[in-house]
Image 1 (cartoon, rainbow, N blue to C red):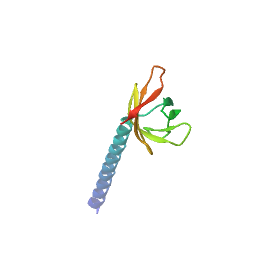
Image 2 (cartoon, helix red, strand yellow):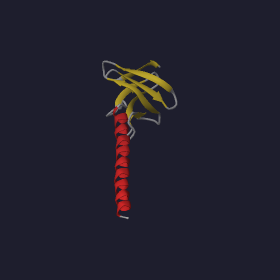
Image 3 (cartoon, rainbow, N blue to C red):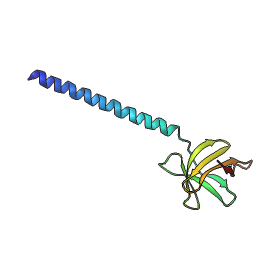
Image 4 (cartoon, rainbow, N blue to C red):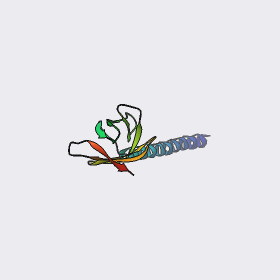
Amino acid sequence: MKTIITAAIILGVLSGGIYYYVQQKSVDSIFMEQQSIPSLSEPVAAEHTMWKDRFVPIQGEPGRVKRESNDDYATILELTPDSITVSWDKWGIEIFKKNDKGVFVFAGEA
């Protein structure tokens, strides 16, 4: 009986350790994925041929932005100091290049 109890305790400790290891690996991989998502830290000015507005980062959704004045949402596909490529939920993929005034101006569709 003592052997069975000892084996049950060891098995419980091992399975708990394995569960913790798997859970920690999942948390680590999610963290690494979030680190690689291009995201804005603050709103930036943007101009399209049809509008002037700002891209505003969405709290709690890394890589997501919306236009400040309406409900057009997009995912940032690429972000460099000089350009932003976004995939609009409704409109497709567009590229914006930063001009000398620091405004991201529509440069075309991807």
